[in-house]
Image (cartoon, rainbow, N blue to C red; front, side, top):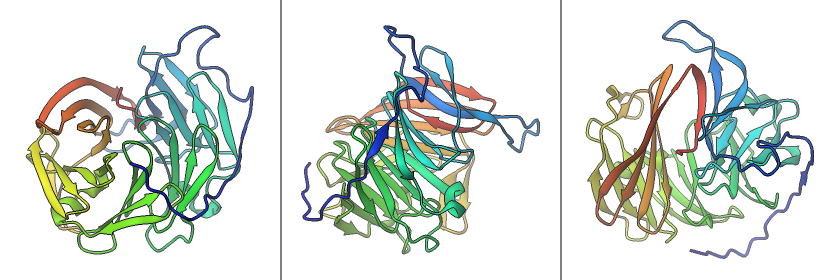
Length: 331
């Protein structure tokens, strides 16, 4: 769904830097997609993790590849849902680097985040197809800088989205890559807002608690008004919400994660311990759910979901051991 906004897009060139990255595969060899990027854990304590060495990534053929020069903090790396591209904050100068499977990179001329004191709480987010990258930061009320949205292929800075913080809010891209969905935790149930790629807000609603409490996983359909969320709990569900009518239009069960369930006293809601979920629309009526659970030994399960019928199918499952951070594509 295309929504046009009169505000001018802010353009900022990224410079292609030939030869700055070694090709991911020899010339003429087809490179396998990225399954996940990770940082190793050296702590022997089963209850704590200790960062060890640089980031690296593993492709679907099982090969491990180095990813040197990446900043050492949580969420400094993002992998596209199709595993064809990754993006990260470079440690030496805090610039955004967008890397393709063939090793080609684009490096931003300026820092991805202007404040050096806030870099360790900066988050990189990528769209399912790897065409868009967002960089945001910090706690609510502690930053004056809006989230920045980049076109990963052309290098243009498409826009800035105000009022997004890493620890309190969530940002994702619509299924067709035309819009940005933001969940801000500024009232009891939170607010869902839709923005054009230049950052202009086109819609804003306060959803019911079923949606607002679980909107950290929210994914916007290409139709521009259907939102899917993962409803956490002992019996987890997918819920669909219509931004235009304000109604929950469907709920259906998904397999339980097996994780411990407890109540978060701060937010007064049920959570699943050591669990992370990513939802992506892969078609008009199809979702992909990537669920990552555990600590020290991380188990990943990828489900294909048909929202028209409510059918849920396990597509793949694997484990990641010996890591302290993981950015998973879902392949």
